[in-house]
Image (tube, rainbow, N blue to C red; front, side, top):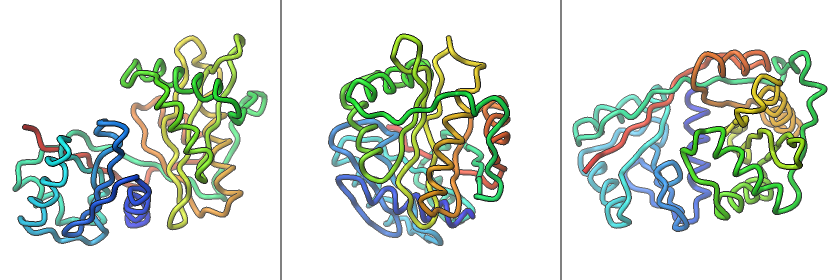
Length: 251
């Protein structure tokens, strides 16, 4: 599955507006943002980069005044991490990922009563973007660009789901990428602090996963942070499968 996740990462980056491929790496860039979480690179499965390959990759970021950064499953390309370390890259984080397959999908008790909605109007996307910004303690600011990015996910083959707050806004939501190589990535699961503990995260996770299985994918995967999140996802049917490595070059 590590190779499937890595092949997905490659296919997903190839959807970016600007694509650079060099020395076994794929780098995807979006001129609309300088975010390192949008502009990054990943290796092809089995890549064996040379020092020159890594330097050319660094240059692809430098000419755009962006931080060189990669996300990848190390077991799918074992020779990449040593080559990056040799060039001065450091590890930002190592995240475990979980995988759900159709036969494991479960709807946790109580979440069936949580009304999960599909966004339709611009106001819905703005509300979801604002709610996720709040849920993630303002790691990113809510913006028109963020709302537009959510709409593109929904319209380009992915899916966005949310639960309405009593005031008509968004209590919590999440997204799932358009499928590639038989899998899809579920991400950005967030609930506003005032609405936590009500099964919202589990409900949107189950709804998105079910949507992807209905479209024929063989698996859905996600990363998690914290044991509380892991327990939520395991209740839906996700199980530990591997790790992904985040590396960047400072200076």
